[in-house]
Image (cartoon, rainbow, N blue to C red; front, side):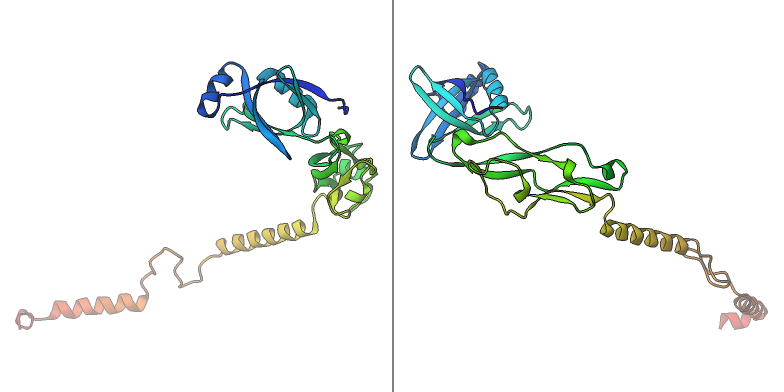
Length: 253
């Protein structure tokens, strides 16, 4: 994408609230324009045309919003509200900018370049820890993305930080700590992960060993009723014999 501004036709909108559903059925999207020191204005745009412009401009591309025949407002597409079920856009926020005042917008960090050899060998992975940065610049100097070449990563723990990024420092200011890591070459399995895997393996082995133990002789296994011992059996037999020898008279007393 270049810094050339694209144009999007819009119309003033007087329909507000729940009535805007009728606009969407007719292929129109409701939205509003706001900005610093700018009176908010309600507008509608053609849905299909907007989607094409939004894809082209992204979050950082300037758009000339042409409202009717006279008004032209330089805007950024600040937010697109979507239907939670269909994902279709239902409302747009346009932020009008002052071309002479700097704005702050998020700019994505996009990885480019050939993957390091250690990745292909399975020894390492490319770990991106920062996906975008806040950038301050004049509206006309905004860029679509900042490219990060990972081909420079050779050894484990090699990293690219914010201060290593390539961009026009005379026009852009990145609002992030210079030492913040953007991407690094990390071990395929970290030391912490190796220790965790070893601990899990040890616990599994211990559990298997416990389950495989056999009960000690004379000791009942879990869930079983202890077997009757010889002494208990003998005592029971003697008791029954004494009872059988009792006279009827004794039993009646």
